[in-house]
Image 1 (cartoon, rainbow, N blue to C red):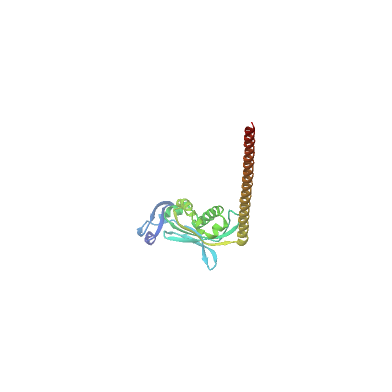
Image 2: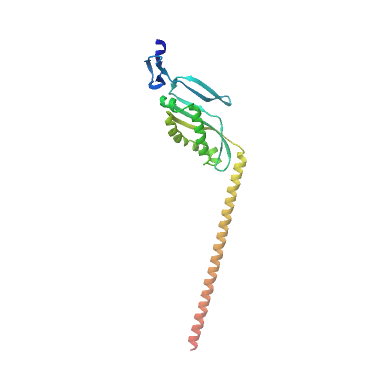
Length: 235
């Protein structure tokens, strides 16, 4: 009983305690004495992913009582998304997070890494759907704006999202997609040039007809004046 009643909690660690199944308090860094078996630590289990070589494999952590509040980095399997111009792109995302509230993490979430992974996948898919493939390939920071929206949701689970980044981008049939975009851009430029040429031709023709009408009107006016002067002189 004495052995199970004494806890030495290290820095950046927390233990959630329960009295007969009900939450009572959280043990933080330092020595603590509780009356076992009435007070028991709350256990939790995780299933997350780790990178081994070129593969991302799942790892299960069972029956843990110590909650680490250090900053951690979570890797995820590669995800296929569809860009705004209907190009298929594979993204390799990584997330940095920190548990800020052990009580919320244990009681408000079940398998936190899995929940964060699904939330990140949904947010990345939504943001990537609003970008063109060249924007995703050339500037991966365009996807970093999802950190704020992720953090607002994760706060309910006692988690602070510190960083969301894209460490790899693979575009399938990228050459065909970019070639198609290039052809479309060239087609648009050709249409614009033809429209400008037609506009200039129309303006020149209109100005020529206007000058012709003005010249003819001046000639008719001069003839009328001459005839009137001749008639006046004859009279």
